[in-house]
Image 1: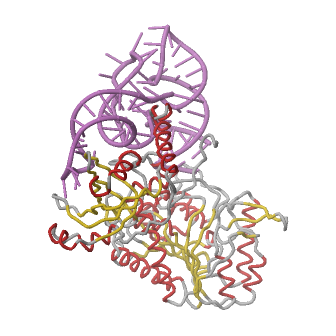
Image 2: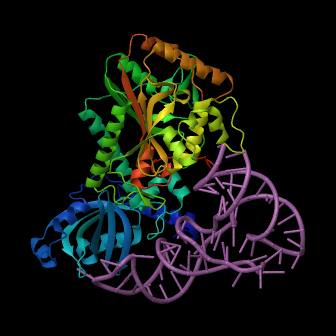
Image 3: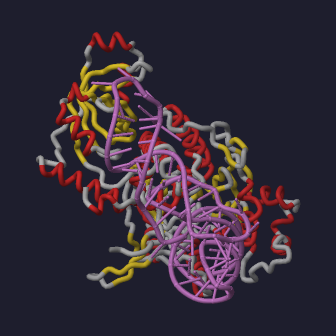
Length: 504
RNA sequence: GGGUCGUUAGCUCAGCCGGUAGAGCACCGGGCUUUUAACCCGUUGGUCCUGGGUUCGAUCCCCAGACGGCCCA
């Protein structure tokens, strides 16, 4: 062994493993790709797990497996390996007298925990009854040059887990479970909308005019056109152009980008599903959303991906029962003790800010929304549809027929978080133009989140958009909820992180 | 942006009142042919996040910074 390899720490471990790799290269292909697996660990357990030791011995059933070495127990001339593949773990028994002296020497000298290997042999059970592949042939398929984290505790440090997701996935079954759940969630959502005749579409991620939500956009530059382009904050305005075009039911599942802070609930890029439906109103979408959520929970439970009951602050969240419905005025009234009718008075709402000065240029709607967000939102643990949103904070939603200060809009809250936002669409081009002008006025006053005037979108509405309703639903938030993850970073494979240190 | 808590071996973590650091796993050497987080014996491994300051002396106290967690804006 070289001097480097004798030193301790990771540098020494890597040096020692590199020397092993060089020895492997010296005897032929060190990264072979001709090993063919015959069974997954799970398939072997399903097929043989219940059979007796004697029964297995008589059958002489044969297999070839492959995976990463997770545990290793060497007892002189015989050893046990636990390898892990995509389906789970299986134990292997390697004996000098079965694989040959040369192969066994290699195994002892050159193989480490973390290496990817292939094992072929017969099925057996050990004295303690564990199903095991009794090796006849063993192959090292890919050498791991870095040591894995501690075998029992795994990788616990959240920062390291997010920065090195590959190690997190190798070590933490629970992490793998979260991303399988997320995948199934999206898949089941597609099935739900496909069954109902919605067309899945892809609209631009780069917008000449940012729109569809009040949020700060990322800006980029297109060289040939020599124009600024904005990463989309929402696909909404493009999806509604498609409704004008006659695609009466559309949905899109993809990324949105918002240039704001990082919190346990916010990542600069995040995934939503938005869907639109002609000849429907917001109340139809409330019903649709409730059945969607019920369906998702049922399907994920059936697939064994939602392993625990969802709870929030020690309180079980009842996802399979009917959801509550409440107006924003009633919700704020219940929390503040002010009568709902009295809350229509801007001064009564302003008074709820207490000692703090309420922004003087905010209208009634914005103030009410702020009170709702501060006082009510976090307390909506059980699934609750809130309706009756102020028009002032809903520039793309259709005004309510019986109160022009309100719009036909709802949001769904679960576990204190906004999960969905939907409304009857504003298809009156003149009203929409006025709402855009109001937004531009806010922007001129310095509101970085206010919307631009999108004349092209107004022109599309002037071709007549059928009465419609639409909704956006946060996939990350939903994945958090259903997997019990406390942070959005736990449900994003590669969350946005501040870069760290030397890049050599 | 503000507040607060954290950062010690590759990993998981101890470290008292300020006296130059330990354990388990991993690694390395030895033993062991049905083990189970295998076990037994013996080693190796440290910029105590970084930079200043106080002190005879700082992982420990003070200041600034980096990165992260949480809360607030």
